[in-house]
Image (cartoon, rainbow, N blue to C red):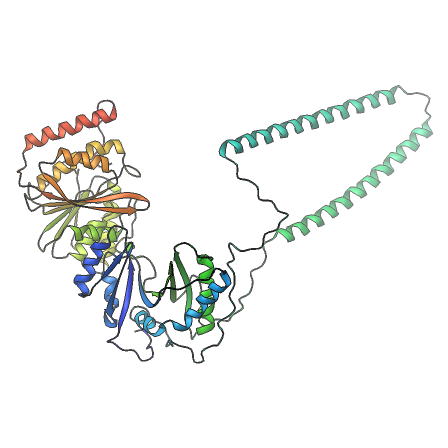
Length: 542
């Protein structure tokens, strides 16, 4: 149970904003409109809508969103001055006008704190602190220090070679000097042995003087050693890292800890995100006197600045929701949010059979088994490590909720399934970057599409494929055009890769083994031309 917040009203509405993978905005928009029956505004990478306060927790059940926030206040047409200090003073004053009560009410529906959280301070401070400049870009520069120009790779290589030659020359000169000293010592020894006429007293005096010189030199050497050790200790003390500064504020256990994160977009701002977050966070601290913690925080305040639009939000998620249902990650683990949106594109109906023939870590079948429990989900892969990860993820989900999912080891080009036994085939094809190769895709994609055409139902069957190798998938679709028609394509940004989701519908053409073999041979001939020789026998799922 969360702590009560002052004057909470269940009938109040709050504005929710959620981040979405670029390309899936319309898919998540339809999902939110169906579940909450409210209009949804979709922008690039995010959606926004209003829900009753009592339904805030249900927002986290949207399978296609990554992070979720409650918008406390929006400020439009904010005229930022040209001076940075004036901008920081303006952002600090915004704290007075934020609807903290609405945000904390929504926050309390998901999180809890062991003491009541007041939505306003007992005494509103008159001053929220003096604005400060950014610590990253506005440090005073020393004019005596000249910035060294950046060198190219070839210039750095030449510099290293030159330094190596200079070092070798210095060593050669040093060895030559040492050789000259040895020759001089030998000459002196020869002269001393040939000298005659010295008496024993002179030799005795010389030995005595030499012993005294040796003792004096030993004393001086020991003194120098002590001085050098003292200098070394002083230098180590100077180079030692400075001790951490003690905290200037005491932690109040009766109040929550918070941090401020700033997301800035647009041009013409005379400040950076770090400076805006620092000044706004200082104003929030002076307003509420909450504890400050960048890692172990209870409340995360989000400051969004987009051009002249400013919004202040509270985070309703501590980490991205794309990790749900996944505990064993592979080299190309698909996000759970991507899997959910791909399944939404298939327009699934109760009782249908869903197959993922190249499941990898099991993101897609796990999501279908949890979110579409009235459908039957099966999956498989040819790689043993992939099957192991899928089983670990199934066991992880089974700890919190019942799940029915079968995993089989098979080859995607020779599935052990009856003809026209599946309703939907959905999978994340190998891109050929981290797993497999682009060359193998020219043989894998046509073979997989042909086998999916065999096992899916005529006219009613669908396929949903995700890949970044667009040239290869387009060629495979042209080869299998008799069986598949592309109805929808959704561009997707996956970590900087321009991927695409293809939604295919099965035609009315019956599967014919002879025609399929001929089509496949055509595809293999094309792959042979790409390869520049005869195709080698490789693992089809690699």
